[in-house]
Length: 411
Image 1 (cartoon, one colour):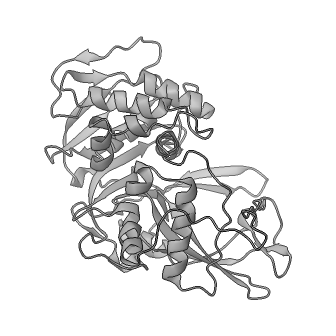
Image 2 (image 1 turned 90 degrees about the vertical axis):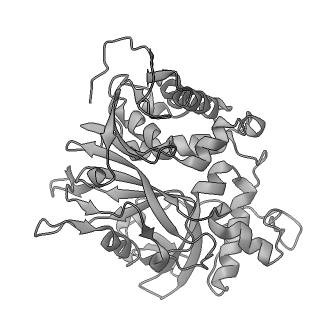
């Protein structure tokens, strides 16, 4: 909420309760930012990369999709202050202003959906540190009729033509989407890159907790697309409400799960009713085994088994109102702390399992696996992961425009 409005807040020198566990002042409804920064601060591989200064040599100042390196530099400066041991409370003013310049929707003192902020911050950091200096046009790969593993490798190589950064190394994986036209049966298989998995919640009638496994099973169960997300069938030459199945192909070192608590339903009179699912989701703290949900190959030296290290929590009726807090496992001392803006207190992993848990941050327990395992796979097959740009018969680099899919009625 709106705790910080009207005050000029200053950082407070002092010894934090633990290294890297520093309170963040609220700058007027900026708890959405504080909650995300507290969780991301304990993404160990990412934070170490910044604290060691590795980012300096990778700043991409000329990327039109980035902020000229400003977001990455502001984030690095905040992390350095958080881990300096000199402050008990910090003011994240520079980071907030820098992100607002890059993503103008945050350039105000309104409450925002912390999940949207999280993806903007992660994307801003990615583009500011993107090792690709000039992005070619890349045609999407159609995986139908190809061996899945081959299609996954080629899709990832296409991704690397435009995206290559510490975020791609540690925070991105692939999912496989299989779409079928209900009219003619035409099928399409695509391997898409994700950095967050959005999980559907089905409220329980008996008010008991929803197991996380149930949310993961629902995510992979398949859905009929609605008219807003209609798919263009090139065979029928029209948009159709296709059947879509999603499977996780690979999972990255840092796995972010988004519990879809906020629903938008029409009230029948053309208006939108926003509702929030407040059921508790029972998620594991020390061991989340993703093996049952991963379709691609599993590397036993870095298996998809995770420990929870952060939960971004929301209280209130809608994502754009109410208040955000965080419960986070400190990457240095392994203890749990609760962050409510400038207040930091001891907590436990169990205390984060509430009806307010909104974003769950997990880290791979054993080993480390660049590109969610794809680096090792390309090495084993002796494939160059870069230089995947293909030419068509006439020697021109292929270009494909994106089809607009919005607002077409299903037939």
